[in-house]
Image 1 (cartoon, rainbow, N blue to C red):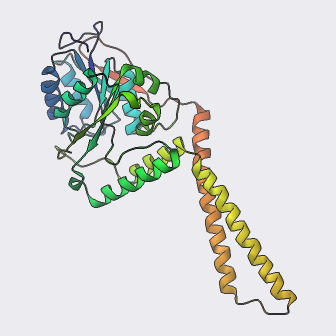
Image 2 (cartoon, one colour):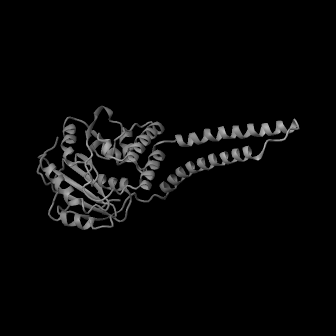
Image 3 (tube, one colour):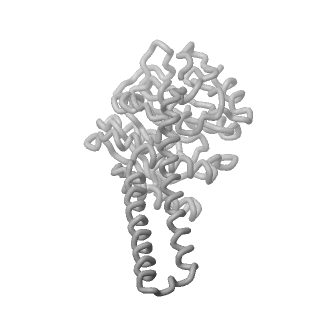
Length: 329
């Protein structure tokens, strides 16, 4: 679509931006940047790489700061603290200037060698190019099973379909990206948001094989995975509240039936059977009640965060040798 010098300055247009959020990835960064530079230079058009340090506790920022001094195509952002993967990715997308913006992880499990395929689809007219991993066996059984179950549940609850094997490895043309950046969700679930945008007539999917992690271990703990999962459902669906209402109606009906049975037995002069069944029903009802209260609590917490109006990320420092753009919010 666009062409130009390989190293765009702040004033020149950029054809391709690559956005990479990282957290404690200092051991991966040199290899990542080297592979990205080789692949992107081979495309023969202007590009930039926006790497967002999401409050790393290792020397990731020092590595990025040093690399940016000799790489005019590199823009490094350091967030003031750890805001989480989705917010760090949003910070990079906000900063990116490319006509096409590719997002990917920084552990090299998203192979940079796939980027030319994404760009080729964009050249063919696609505005959104998704990716889907095909070698699921390379992941642990728990990761595979939980991913499939979650995306099936999310698709049912939200009405927004997400394929198994999806991730934040994708290409967005400028038009859908600008619409995505208009979202004001406090906890933005980008995979669902991109699907919600639509653009089905001008989207495609590229399959890829997950590479081995170059160094270190995954930073996505079970707690982080559960938080991302709950954020996605709360952001895109009211069905959990509706399910809670119907569960409340059903359990209330069961409670009234039990009360009617007790009253009927009393009027007949019969002894109400033991306490075990009564205690069991009461425990069940309280369990359902507290589950419903928990769901309501998630939505109230989301509303509370939205009312506070705090920024979703804060850029503390920008490192680039091209005299590029400043911070974000």
